[in-house]
Image: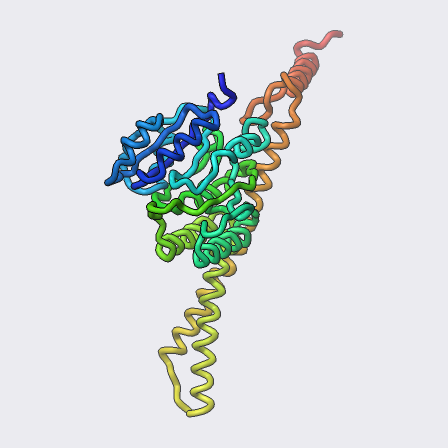
Amino acid sequence: MSEYDDVCVLLPTMNEAETVARVVTDFRDAGFERLLVIDGGSTDETGSVAREAGARVVKQSGRGKGQAVREAVRDHVDASYVLMADADATYDPADAAAMLDPLLAGDADHVIGDRFADMRPGAMTRLNRIGNRLINLSFRAIHRENYRDILSGYRAFTHESFEQLHLTADGFGIETEMAVECVKNRLSVAVVPVTYRERPGGSATNLHPIRDGGVIFLELYRKAKTNNPLFYFGSAGAAATTAGAGMAAFVLYRWLADGVGHEIVAVGAVGAIILGIQLLVFGVLADMIHSLHVEQIERYERAVDDRPAGRPSEVGGRESAEGRDADARVAESARREEPGDARD
């Protein structure tokens, strides 16, 4: 018996024949027997190489890393814990124990491996490093949590907590979406320092920095609608108001300096300012509703946590035992006071 018998190592792959065997072998040497490689339609020998190395290989029905992760966990993983990594040999299986410790100890529902804690030379280009930093700063500002490295592909999570996440991203936005959903569902998240290595020679990355970076930023902003509505609507409102004020300033300058009126631009300026103010007000109202909702959830959780063991729940319309006893006493008192029961 191994301490990792209830852990499944999940490796989403796409044309990783150069490295997948090494990754599978290293995880097996680290004590993991349950390895699942989900192949996203590789045109090389990824599937056969992984199978020969000792992994279970499943052909992905769709496309994209996000879809692969959802399909794998939903349909092919029956373990209580999932350790997810890339199959490009950039992550060190020696860090797996540290990744799983918070889960096995019951201290966290989701673990993120922080690549910046030990990033080896050549592991990330300067453009990717800057992009990662900007995305992490944006996440911290929008969602008010500091997970240090939300784009890390080295993750560990409980199967139960994964089922609480509403994930829709198909591509590399899956890591960002998982981080946002952890905040939204108030899951306990631990951040563990890990080693991030340079890709071995001969292997090519599937990441497109500009395209995928844009998708990730859009995903961050889109998810702010439910986690931080003041930012979501307020930023759009501020942009509209600023644009309207700029157009109004142009119209005023042209009229004062040259005596030229720009009626159409003036109408656009007024419309933009009104729209911006409306969005700002709506953002404030939505943020108040969101805060009230969070407060109600916290009260419910405190009520559940504080309820004595063995006592019937008062949530969901059911009365407590004390409440039923009190009602019985009141009914008995009323019955005795009825005229038909009086004694002369």
